[in-house]
Amino acid sequence: MEKRAVGIVHEVLSLTVEKMVEVEKISHFRNWFGIDLNVKDLFLDHPGMFYLSTKGKRHTVFLREAYERGCLIESNLVYEARRKLLDLVLLSCCGLGRGDHKSNSVDQRVKKMKWKRCIMIEAYCRLKLFTHCGIAKL
Image 1 (tube, one colour):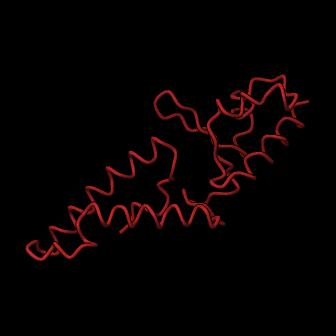
Image 2: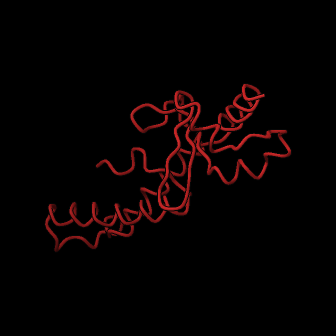
């Protein structure tokens, strides 16, 4: 029974764009999938297949085989579009996209961009719209 549950959850995670989902969302479908086990314990029993992240009160499960060093191995087109959109939003927030940065030195602009970028990444990660992989690097 446990092997079947692991297979079902593995397939569900592999169908998602970011290869991750909150544990609470998977546990909503437990009865529909016919899984009688505690989903969180299922992830903890199979650390080679799943990575369970606990940040605050949220538990997020990642498919280990889809990530390498914290980044998606094969990114989806939707995932790439979200990352590019976030980069454009961050550039406009820093004033680098409008040409109003003439009075600041390059170092000040880069520091400002890094600071705002970190704040924006935290906010988006909390909302689960974007993942932080590859975005925080300049």
